[in-house]
Image 1: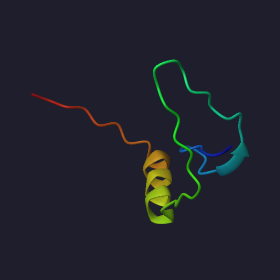
Image 2: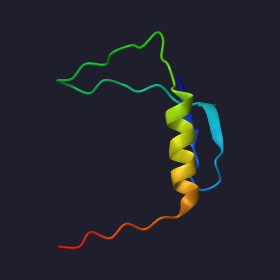
Image 3: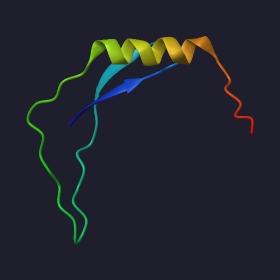
Length: 59
């Protein structure tokens, strides 16, 4: 199974082969034949990670 791994600080995006999941008792595993990655969203997340912003919620 392939998995996209992204380092938000460095901006690296890797496609790695990882071990397939196994269904546990009482659950189901759905096989995905195709998937789409939105490059705009991925780029936005990398830029956000590089910004190093700290958001503090005040009440």
